[in-house]
Length: 353
Image (tube, rainbow, N blue to C red; front, top):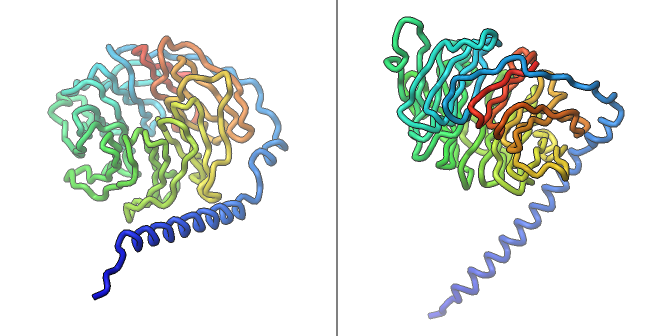
């Protein structure tokens, strides 16, 4: 009876698969080059330079007794929800700086919070591995309105409502993202693809709302199809953890902020990086970012207590904002684009306009 040489056959199969993979990589790069018909920097050279920006802190929100970790605006452009290392959730009136609601969580390091589209519910999560929702009410103790919606096997790092109050998307230190039904707490879809902690996510602003992007400690940004749970695009280039991701207002591109002190802009249609926001003098990690309403400005918070404002198209740093006394941990532009709110490890939030 003939005996086949098992190990030799296996090695030959591995070599064949390796060659096939290299061939596919070459074909992929060729297709990407075909899509990259116009370089962004060439187009941007024809645009006028933006005038000098003069943003000043108009409000300072004080109330947290620990590091501010997350913030989110309500769609009424006026209210905000913030979370902190002190285990508190605070709902603010950004115009008057009044605290309208205060919620004490059963854990410290509340790393995620989100305002529901209706403005009547807030969600939060952290080291308790859960994402909990609270129905905002003036009459009753909010702790009685608490309901756990999501449960991960590690901390909840980020969460955001979909286009309604009925569904919420979460990211976790267990390297997964998940879509949940708010009313029943049922898991609707899970997303597996990251090899390390998921640190940030953002839902596409398109009407269909079928895709979202996530970034993690594996240095990768992944684009997901909500309906199938499959990763449809992956982007790399960063040399360290990705801390935050944010879609461009059109939904055709997104930006990422990383501990490597750089931010990158990726175009979904060209399937590649189209701009990088970095300078040799910037050596501290980028922790958070957001676009202006038009997308022309990119606001980035850093570990050196500053916020840098970049021209998204030209890749130039326009100005820097100073005022916080510790690292910038979160920032968001208001839905109407008239204000920027920054949160810091100095326990405060500042609203710039």
